[in-house]
Length: 306
Image 1 (cartoon, rainbow, N blue to C red):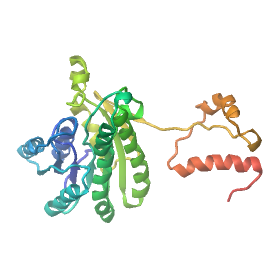
Image 2 (image 1 turned 90 degrees about the vertical axis):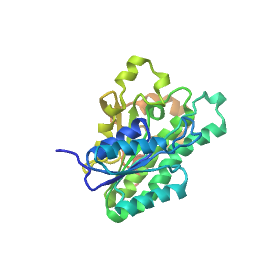
Image 3 (image 1 turned 180 degrees about the horizontal axis):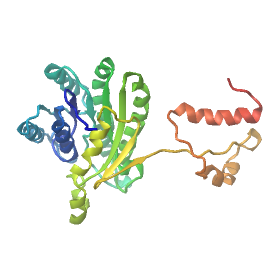
Image 4 (image 1 turned 90 degrees about the horizontal axis):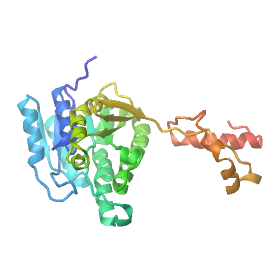
């Protein structure tokens, strides 16, 4: 099976450099028409320039592909709306959205400012939501859509000095979970890529030998799979240095504490059983987890549930 994107239109945010550029080039090389989005600002979100996005567009065109650049601030609904409208003006559809744009304002939480918190969450989390809101109705009407969020090990597992970034990166996973459910009936599949690559966001943090291994190009094959016709949905795909793995969020079976023993001391006493991974569940919706506990309580009370 060869994965192709002929006649598909893709929007990739933050595609002026790094991972976003590689994603755009990879999609274009396999036939997609590209909207190359990049605000062109600094790592902290300051400034702005059309040059990075235009450079990616020229690379796509030089290879025989079709693309145009758009400098929308992904957190600005009017600018994003204009970007999506121009995609429809030129090509009449939007099939793939890659929410990749991001900034960094790292510092320990004791020194974190509200301004630095808001700036990072605005681009990563609000930006992913705003771009998806603009594309969503068109994907519903077409009964086809592939949306990829971008998370990080900093969000899934944590990393010192990145509370704002980590919170936003875990937030897009929650967004994915809901959109997976809401988009299923219209063949809109929503996934998350959790990449590790040497880009301008990470190169100052890594030694040269590791930078050489963590080529952004080694991540893009995972993105192309998540954007494909036969993509899964609600998957978190981790990709670094040619390695690929899936993060799964499981919940232990847990315990039931009857009303007469539902105390913090009882929770403490049962902590080992509560934490026991044997029989852990992978839930597809929040209601399933709720019904697990309701079922235990109903069974203990002798109540039959429909």
